[in-house]
Length: 507
Image (cartoon, rainbow, N blue to C red; front, top):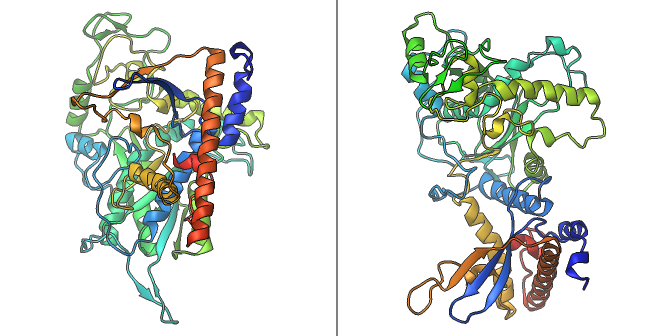
């Protein structure tokens, strides 16, 4: 082996990516207090972005593919899994959103006159779709695949993704729609459940159109008439009842912090507080929402049957861009031009300085103190990822999954993938190599934690050697699994290989 100082780190990372090993693992030193043994363990970074770690992103996408397939065409009611802090993307829309609460705090929730009313149908306590009998006597339980888009903001050159006339493109509206897109989706699910007559379960992914506006692909369980879907989409909107944010008040000279409030840079008078601004809005009989978010006219919906090639292709299509941020979706496309980068910069400039929430620092730009104030707030530097050039306003979840989708959390699906390998090794008389034996919950004979974990910050050469050791260990694991598979095939039915060939994806 090369001396530590001569090990090329980048070359080892390229090898790690080819082998399906995390390219930027976290190294931890583990001390076994019972034996005194010291080991260095590498933990995957678990990034979902291909640009950060292709190996972890690939495993994360494979897990989502499994989750999507598992819940789409269930034939029995699932047991609702409890919410977990580990499943940040999982959610359920039975409760009311923050937007609805804000509406009641400021304005009546009476529907607008320019949108149709939604019908209320009797609700059934089920999550499964209806069963249909075909002419051949077979029973079918179809489900839906739906795509929702935002409206147009100006003419886009076909196949290019940027506007033909940037001066006539409504970048501000595009930015505001992106910032509040998740609220619109929450409201759409609420309305769809009311009109479908049962607790519709869903698995959806937010992606970017070429023009960089987010759109939404969603698999829903059960057949829903296309007319109902289109009517719900047309009637769904979200009113953002915030103080006016049409013209910025402070651009060159910004408000300053005096230890309690932000002050006008010219007069030294404290800026209007968030509470005062909302009370003023509530008292104004002529007040209008700061912004209204609606879907575009394009709505695609089709029914799918379980076990068909079309359904499998749709699952892959739905999860295609889960490893990319909004701005990364077409970044490596051969057709990307300089005008496209300029289009992205214009959109980012709007997103960067518009408020994303009640606590956003950008409210100072409009002469209002955020709901939560403190030193260091500066317009244009809100820490929310929604303001980054990478996300372009989409600061919420990239995957939306209802808790009743598959009856399991994402951690549960991850455990299922590991169990496939564990069982194959067990039947072959092998033990699965895992760091679980060093877990923090393992105790010694006195009831104290047996293993002590500490961070390791290796140098360049050391990091390469540790990463190389992880690659070699992963190869041994893969060889063990392939050998166990061969033994099981020789004895009886083959191991379920629906999750792929790489044992590294299951550990």
